[in-house]
Every structure is written in C-alpha cells, then in structure tokens.
Image 1 (tube, one colour):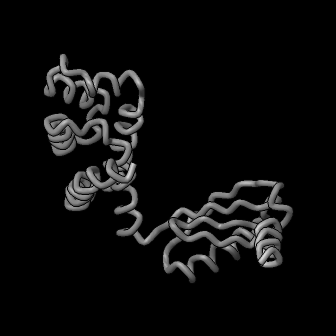
Image 2 (tube, rainbow, N blue to C red):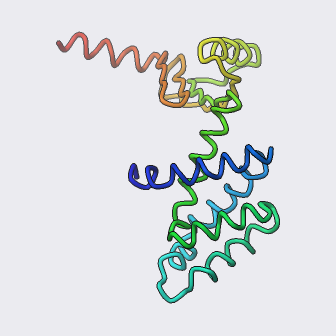
Image 3 (cartoon, one colour):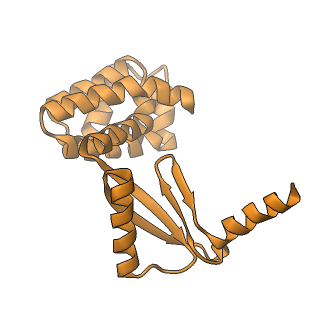
Length: 178
C-alpha cells in the first residue's frame, strides 16, 4: 500500500496544482472521486491490467465515464495516467489530492467515536476545542460504540486522543501488570 501511495503522490500533486491554478479544486475533487470509484471496481481493474486494450482506448473509456466534469485538462490527466499505466492508482491519487486540498484550505475531518450520542452543545464545544488545538476548520463525523463504556476516542488524521473509559481501564491494566 505504501508503494502505491508513493507512486501516486506526484500525480496527486500535479492534479492539485492544475486544479488550484484554474480555481477548480471542488470540480477536480468530484471528478477524481468518481474516477477513483470507477477504478476500484473489479471489472475496471481487469480492464486496466489487460494488455489487449490499447492505452488510448482505456483512457477514452475513463474520460467518457467521467463526463465533461474535468474538461480538457482533466482529460489530458487521464490520458497521461493511461499512458504511464497508472489508472489503477486513481483511488490513491484521489486520496492524495484530498489531503493536499485539506492542507491548502486548512480543514480536517475528525471522527469522534463515543459511547453514547453527543448532544449539539457537546459537538459544538468539541469542534471549537479541536479547532483551537489543530488550528484548522473542523468537520465532525460522529459514531457510537457502546463498547467504550463512556467517554470518546477522537481520530484527526494521525492524531488519536483516547478519552474512553475502556481505554483508561486498558492503560490501568497495563500499568498494574508491570
């Protein structure tokens, strides 16, 4: 997986720079997400790996699937990926693009897994606290996991804050075992 991300990174950056130059980040996000979903389909993956299908024809199939969303620059990007046998990396390219976009727009999606449903006031206070700590606009995605017993676990990119009762009990158990 890391190798695929490494190979996809320059393509994601190129797409991001092209989209940013044309002020079309949202348009490219939608189009790359659609192309990535198509590329993740097993039938499409088989087409991407087929030596019988010419690269130009494969690129044209992708361009037609995506419609006019990307315009000529996007179509050229798809042709470049096909030429370099990289259409199968579209999911990783789209993910890299979204990370670059979030960094540029100073936004982050934070997943909050709590033992019970958070109220509106709790969500607002948590979003504000995370905004200050992360220095970014925060979008909360809330999930419920009753196995946590109480509290919450927060996932913000690579940052994980475990404030759950279950996590505290596990840490206490480890400390006592030493």
